[in-house]
Amino acid sequence: MRILVIEDSRLLQFALNRMLTKAGHQVVVFGDGHQGLIHAQHYPPDLILLDMMLPTLEGTSVLRCLKRDPLTNPIPVVVVSGLSQKNEEKLRKEGAAGFLEKSSLNLDDDGRSFVQALRQVLGTSDTYAAKEIAASTAAGKA
Image (cartoon, rainbow, N blue to C red; front, side, top):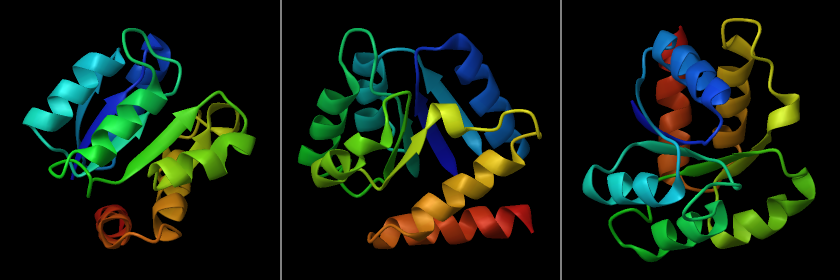
């Protein structure tokens, strides 16, 4: 699976890239919203992990642009943010497939907890594409 990570924290970029690559996925990372959005429009990934606090174009604007574009609309977007989960309902209305709070991420176990949390988020999404990705992620770990 091809995963686009749009995250400005170098530490989290490195950790997510390492964990997802180890789980068998192709990962591309961008540190600002504008570059990430352009990449998604030119090379649509299977999944996007999106931070909210980004330089050049904030995460909610990126999410809106992705969901307005017929090419990128079907791509599940999981918000990975330091903002509290009280924003989850609003983000789902904007089109996010799910929400993971950064403070709850366990980066110390080789990414097993993160990949499992990602599977759970995608598994509870209403979108067909998200369910397909959840299944492929599960099959990749088996």
